[in-house]
Structure formats: C-alpha cells, structure tokens
Length: 280
Length: 81
Image 1 (spheres, rainbow over the protein chains, first blue to last red):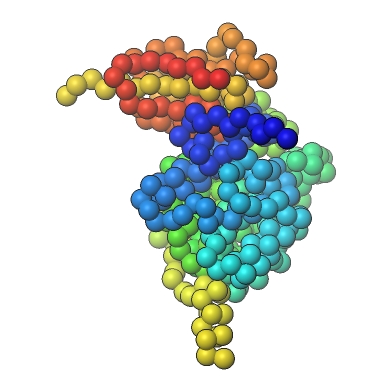
Image 2: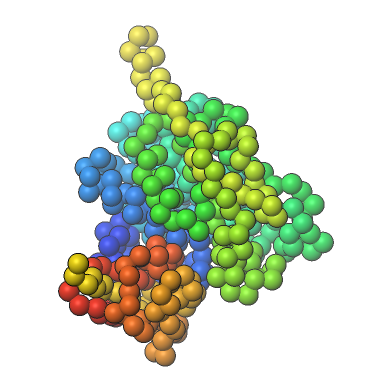
C-alpha cells in the first residue's frame, strides 16, 4: 500500500499525521485549540530536553474528542467508551517508562467512565488526564451530558436541562489527585503552560478544559457563529489564583472559575507498587 | 529599535472558515478571502501584513493548524497548500 505524503508546514506538524488533515471537527471547535496547546507544550518540553516524545502514549475514548488519537503522531489507542483511563493504567503498569496521556471528552471521562476516573484519582495513578469539556454529547447529535448547564436546551431536553452539572474538579479533589487545574479555550497560552507543568509530574493530574461546541451546543442556544459562543465563554470565565478546588464553581450563568487548584507531589501508583515489590 | 516584521503563513487546505482568527486579531488585518480551497471553504487572507504585531493570537486560536506567524525580514503573506 502506498504511504500518503506527510507534509510538514506548521510548527507542530512534527506531532501530527498531517496527511489526515483537515480533521473531522466542525469549524470553530475547541478541541483543535486544546490539541494545539498540547502539541506546543510537548514541543517546548522536547526542545528543552525534559521529555522524549516517543515515550508518550496518547489514549482517547469515544466521542468528538476521542477522534484526536487518529491525528497525533504518537503511539496511542482509541479505546471503548469510558475506558481510556484503564487502558492507560494497564500500559503504564506494563511499561513504567511510558508517559500516558488521556485526552478525552466530558461524556467519556465523567459520564460513562466516571467510576474509572474516581478510582484512578484515588490510586494516584500516573496519568495526565486532559478533559475537554464541551458540555454536550456532540458526536451523537447533542444529547444532554453530565456537564450540560442547568436549563440548557439540547436534543433530549426540549424543556431545558433539569439536572445540575457535574464538577470534575471537585470530584478529582475529593478522590485525591496530585494536580488539578481548569482552563478554557479562551486562554490557550495559560492552558499550554499548565500542560507543560503537569506532563513531567507523577501521580494523577487532571486538566479540565472548558471548550466550545459552536455547531451542536452553541447553535441550539442561539449563538450563530463560533465567535459568539467564544465571547459568551470569555464573559463567564474568571481566573482565580490560590483557591481550594472545592471553591471552583462551574456555573454557565454566573461564573466558571479557572486556575490551578491543587499541586502536590505525592508518590504515584507505579512508584508505590515498585517499592512494595522491592520489599516483598 | 528596528521595525519588526512578521511572515504569516496560511495553510489553505486546512482552513474551515470558522472566522475565529479574523475576529480575534487585535489589528483586524485578517479577512475572509475570495478563493476556495480543496474542501470548498473560503480561506482566510491577510489584508495588511505590514501591520502585524506578532501576538500570535490567531495561531493559538486556530483549531485547524492552518495559520502561523514567524518573525521575518519583511512583512509577507504566504499561502501554503
């Protein structure tokens, strides 16, 4: 089979399977912005000699965000729905030299994979979780997700969503993660700095990215263009420094707090297990 | 201090016409073009490359890896396919 030509034009093209671009995401989708920030963080870390990008294991689940594994030039897997974290855990235990990164959506990680998320955080598993929160199940046509704001119109809630949204930052904090941060696609440079800081750390690291879905989420609630939803998100996000993760509110009507909420350096699961084997 | 110039490269076939870069540019030097790319989108063009201040907001916001800014000798716009 002939191998397609892989053009290298953009500065981060080294980490992309450029022959597959343009990608499947809708115009103005926040997943591309998040992926771009991740690529720039990896590029800077590799230029500084702090990581080896060939050791990165890029795992994604199902959903719009799950498609990311097909566009990156790292080793990776597109796993069953909600099972991205267990896959990364298994790979890390078999090959402790790998750097697993789980890049998936809100429906995948805190919806169907919610239990895996809690217990990976409880065990302080060595995995960086980038949770791209677009507030909806976008790939399947706009059903209500656990992160959909209260009162929002979606395909399955024609009278407004009656449920309160889940706050992934508080869950990770209650389960005991090492690093917890929340950023939004309105601040791509701060998001990049956060990924750059969290990637070489050990333990469970969560970076929630409040994203925009202009086509499935924004269009149904009256935002005609991607930039309108982007400006709406810009109005609601607020950056706060040095506050507890339990004060990080997630409210689409009032405010979504962004920032770095928890930075600890407790031993990761791989190290704990290795120590136990050494003595036993 | 010598005047600094920037080269703005647009990867035409990746652009999806979302207009985020056009709206985010603080100098408003980007605009929707008249040409179509291979997927039928009218990709972004640079109207005044000499006004670019090199903030790279367009590069960071582009979800499609379709635009990037580099320092250069003279202001220019490059269309890559």
